[in-house]
Length: 83
Image (tube, rainbow, N blue to C red; front, top):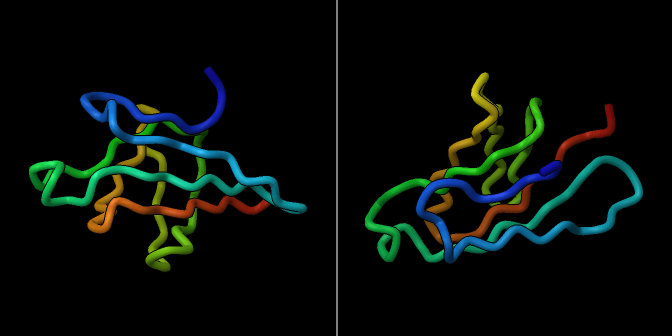
């Protein structure tokens, strides 16, 4: 499927697309890092660079199509500028 979605053992992770005028924005909600046993959130995403507006960190999608987020509080707001 297209878009951003959780992979692996992240059944409690939800990805919500947010309508924006330019670019792409998704909100990611998951249990906090303690409740995830310290594991990061793994997402499948289209190739590119994303800015987490929640933490101001930049994240790249790896060649295997996965993005790894620490998301200690269980929240990420991933924005990608228009291509």
